[in-house]
Image 1 (cartoon, protein in one colour):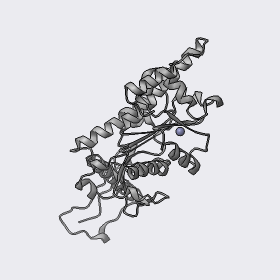
Image 2 (cartoon, helix red, strand yellow; image 1 turned 180 degrees about the horizontal axis):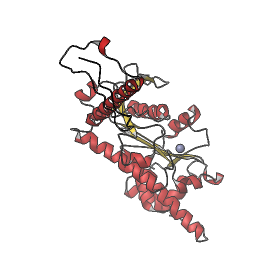
Image 3 (spheres, rainbow, N blue to C red; image 1 turned 180 degrees about the vertical axis):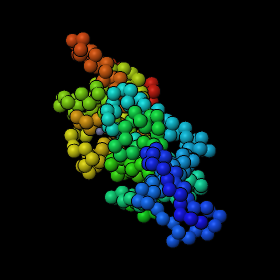
Image 4 (cartoon, rainbow, N blue to C red; image 1 turned 30 degrees about the vertical axis):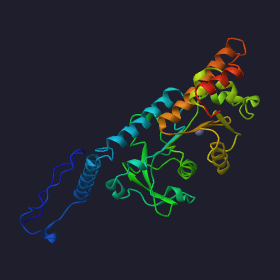
Length: 328
Ligand SMILES: [Zn+2]
């Protein structure tokens, strides 16, 4: 077997390189490659590896395959993400969604190998032992999540030390930087057995606008106004709207104040920022924000028409409480 036949002039798009006949043993001393050939050979191998990796990625099946209940839950998250974007509440990568999906974690899913290294939560949360969460990815956009939830968020497994987690599916998308504060809320729900599984943070325009008026920020002042705009708001957001004074986004203070307000409310307003809601599922959390937002729009429309809206009377609201057996 002689040396490789010389190759023609370089053609930039072609990466095949003629190799010695594979049927005979390879004698390395008989191979002589020009510098150009070595470069082209290396490029060919690299390109082959890239294609193989890409094919492997495409063939990797999603954990949603064969799990219709989990798939339906993730589709609900995507649907809500679309609403947040369409409402103008989720500019750029604004907002967050995390959902406790532990009830869908079958034995096979629990055996899935990690696709990330072990990440620290930064706090130990014993209530979360063995839990699984879907989390929006850090820096990801709601409008993208609406179409591709498993490429813009990931499923994490809380490890047995309850202080760390790994990503298990579908792609190694790093969870939101707000993960610790969301997990603290989820842990609290498990400890108290509330049955709440979802948290949503978003920037509803009218509600945030109202939080710029100090007169509205007293306890239950905004709740009273919003409830009185339309009966359904009191019926479908029966705990009202808690208020958290302005605090640096992502700070421990914000997380602690939110946790405290969530003891009494399902939705809390972060002054001059947005709302944080908990719900039995992601749709429930969204609906509560949506009815509050509807009331805020009615209030603002009335003010735009030049008058202070009258609102339902205390007696009319008390009648609602009795008729629908509301908690407040
Ligand atoms: Zn925000």
